[in-house]
Length: 211
Image (cartoon, rainbow, N blue to C red):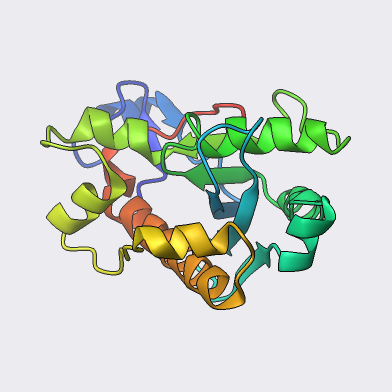
């Protein structure tokens, strides 16, 4: 990973005079920050009529995946995703930089209202950073489709899974076998998300964008 560049965003190898003159700009502001990959699975695209089924967080360069999964009892008792939303918010307290794929358009604006609905506080603007790989990839790659599936397949990153509609239908009613499959799908997504991030790391300037 390139850590230091000159004010023209070049490395020492390409702009040695800038480094001799001290005209450098550190781009490793993220160093010593806790970076984690987030993905959620839900019953729909809108937080006022849908609920979260599972969530997964994979910390950078760590094998362990932290996760939450709804239960059938919670669905039919009317608690819905209250517990797993609370657990996800607690886990995110440990993260400085959240990495998603189209999280700006889905994961975060779904999680925020679910948190509000259950009476939880959400993170204040500027308290955490967010890197949405969808927008980085959209700028870096001119492809026929901008989905995580298509981009990872094009780059030779294996692991993207696909679930049949029946699995989603049964999972929304709390069927354990189908929820397990959704959770496994969720886990695979954060794994390949990290692989994608590693693949494009050197191609972008990583911004201080608020969650």
